[in-house]
Image (cartoon, each protein chain N blue to C red):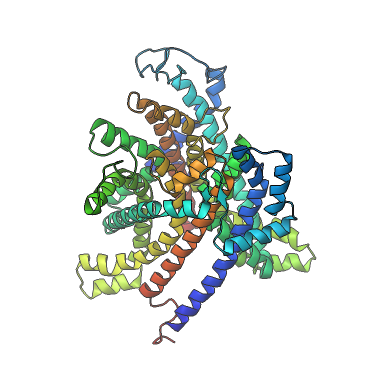
Length: 276
Length: 328
């Protein structure tokens, strides 16, 4: 409880928590507040914001309600960001644990593969993967994870290298546990904290990558995305810049919220560690 | 110096393995793509089933996968990336034509983000915990959260549409017959917005790294020693604290190169800059998978080369790397 209080006492962390809470509320209430198709036509085209209170943020080029699209876009951004980050963390933790625990040739091969993935620009890889397999929510999630798992893998490996020499690992060997069981039941859980500390950075990167993919027209065509809204607004950038600017601000606040909250968590746990 | 060379040789051998893995990866993606080179060719030129059969045989596409991988590697060794269907030209030529533009964009954006980022980082880190330190810390976080392509659009709205100070896109004024310095100035003006959009995103990274590195350096004994010697605060900050925090940033330059290449894809699309990134987007739109994979391979080679250069620079900057003769 005191940790939560300490977390909320830093103004940055509190701001991050509020931003994320608003975002989650938007994502969860999207279908309750605005049931039906978010891409349905709601009024006259290109209505500026704050003109008509039934359409507070105005309408886009096709007369769709920008506020409704914003709410539904929050859902896509959050879902893809969290799913891609979780996938990347799982792949990274497994590869890093295997490499660090097995050592030798397995380590060498896995780390060269990690190097190869770090050499190819992650965004280009995601672009190629989506364009070859075809755009859908699941494919976008995997495409983003392909470019982000390498960081967690390196950190997990470094942590495992120090843990595998500990006494309780030797103990597990003595009682005859299978090496894979030791790696994943004894070593991996203890190697996780520094890997999880990276998660806010990875979630933020995943949200930004998803937006960039949708902006280039490679998002799931059946869903509203903020990146897609920005791309859509770009065609009328001279006459109605707000159509691109509003979803961009939503994106910025979301990523900022993730960073601030993540930093707050890392800082409070660091303080706790420093005191004990 | 000899040990630095040995280190470099080791890196080079490692890089070849890494490149081989990348090639196998792109080959697998190429295989997974629907349709092959013959399909693409027939779509653009027309032909019957007999023709398809003949072409598949002639291009070696009816052979086993391992043979095809061997052929692919053999072609790559001769720097042959295949033929682009959309451009009806060798992929290598199309890429080489676009590469210089992207390199100019990347080098300028890196100079901006590294220069301004580390300078602001020194400014913030000189007085840890002060108001300006906290402000720059939050501001840089906000900057880091800005989507690059959106920043590009906002810059266009402000500086090209509203103020009309700068061109809206492209790399130079079309059909202007400018030459020499005039042309260089024209290109520079066109690059101001794309370089800012790309550079400002990564500026935050260098600022934060510099600041964190300086916070670490302040706690070291040599700072205490410098203070005891009665050096001015300015000298301690610049010659002792900042200097020690600068080295990790050099390594980051290499690591960031892949990110920046990825970022240039969207930025080049936003500003219609005819570089490698824009080419990648055109390849996706035209479903030209061999071209896209050629771009990925080129980027990988570029990233490896940049990292080698950074390693060399690091060996010169940090006398501890590779062990100097005096130390050995």
